[in-house]
Length: 244
Image 1 (tube, rainbow, N blue to C red):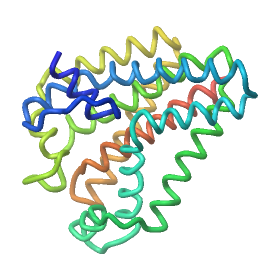
Image 2 (image 1 turned 45 degrees about the vertical axis):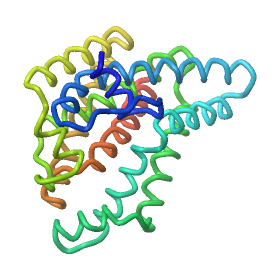
Image 3 (image 1 turned 90 degrees about the vertical axis):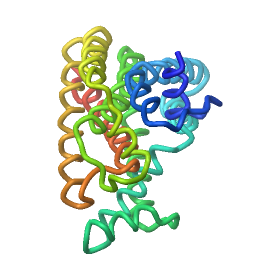
Image 4 (image 1 turned 135 degrees about the vertical axis):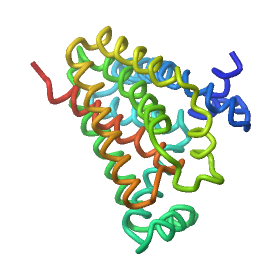
């Protein structure tokens, strides 16, 4: 259960101190989709409570605020840094340095605002009968995307950084295990739509992985957070677009 505690500490604001050594980080990845499901369950509770008292748009806003709060905005910070890195620098090394700069540029603000606006609009548009499966599946697949990116990529800075530690220590069984869990969850929660959302998340990971390889020379911790946020948006989009 120590690896579960580490996963919760890495992905949420819960006071669970994650272990720093590589073996612990790699083992924690196996729990990422299940932690995502737990986050989704909390969001379902928030949405149902808010929806009882408030109109649809207000309950969507409350749910989005809870979504950001439970992760402490950690993954949104990844979106901000990746956007700044993509917008500046003439070499991969220069772009990675920009991503490490604590100052926030215009593209970072635009990127974070874009993700939040997209999530709010899509949350407010999800049919009421589909909101619970959507809120469960979106964080689950977002965390699965982090696992897939870590397991199939090389780090931009091989000698240091959280992403490098994760990638060096991913056990061989983690990706097949997480794939099985997320496919099962997708089918159980949303049927064919869930499988479409799973496939769309894979495409999103592959696209971002290719972009990071070309622009940064590999994957950073910020890219892991960014892919989680982007996949969450993609899952929301799939669940809204297939309205039939």
